[in-house]
Image (cartoon, rainbow, N blue to C red; front, top):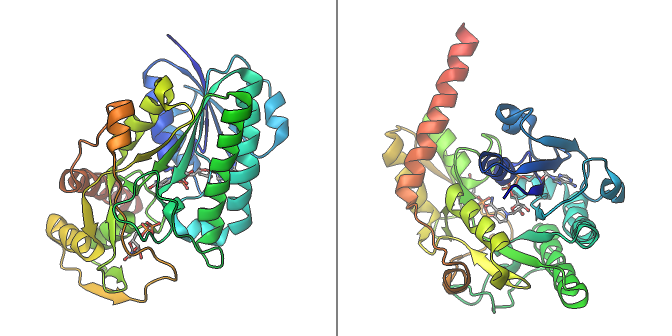
Length: 324
Ligand code: NAD
Ligand code: UDP
């Protein structure tokens, strides 16, 4: 059945991928973005196949926009996600995850729509419990460069809780763990886009700290599948669910893997570790498996191979375009 679906953050990494899948499934999509950390290029190939509204998702006027009618579902993805961007735009990041989330919850109430809010593994901060299950309450610093993102996401979750319990809004919260693919902009600053682009250009691969910190990397198709299942399943209403790949890797190991898979001569170099950089991160996904029947299918090696090929093609094309 065709649905009318709002996606905020449509011009971003995950948003543009989700918009594409929803269009391909035959839905009417209304994408919202203000290009804070996203780009028109991410949507260029989808032009004219969906409605795009350039707007701040915090704006209450959006609820009166001419495209906003008969909405069935809202995916609220808008928010910078890379430390590079949220630290450049701390107040915007706080606003979109708090006021913006409330605005989208009001839209869900107005339209009697279901909503998925994308929270983050950063809600666990620098975790003292390992691996992290949804019941762990986290270890977040309010007085540091990551706080604008982590605490805003946590408050966004609180808004979802209040609307679920008071107004019975069918809202679900996804705590997404590091997701990647070549859809990450070259200059996004997150580790996979940095490492692969550095390796392909023969530049130094920049490991922050000694590289013993860990992350669990999920390929974009797996994460998007999880988000769509969360929207679909009534069992997920009023629930917080981890979406991530439970295979944990040290950052040094990722640098070495990228070096091997690209065959680059790049050196691995070591740089200061950013303040409050979490030391370990790995989700338990029992809840996602039980409520959604979801688990990731793409291994890091396979996902990296796809990512490397796609970035390589883009780089070769841009070299050709410059010459030609
Ligand atoms: P991204 O930065 O690529 O995309 C975010 C999009 O939101 C951008 O296009 C940006 O312009 C838009 N945006 C920001 N503020 C806005 C506002 N006020 N109004 C309208 N649009 C706005 O990030 P992403 O990786 O695609 O992440 C999408 C969501 O998933 C974010 O909420 C992020 O916190 C969450 N998440 C992502 C990851 C990941 O690994 N990619 C991990 C955890 C959580
Ligand atoms: N990182 C790194 N080199 C880079 C970019 C990131 O070593 O060029 C490290 C970063 O310090 C962190 C991990 O990789 O420990 C993941 O960083 P990212 O910014 O991708 O995401 P987050 O820290 O939010 O998980």
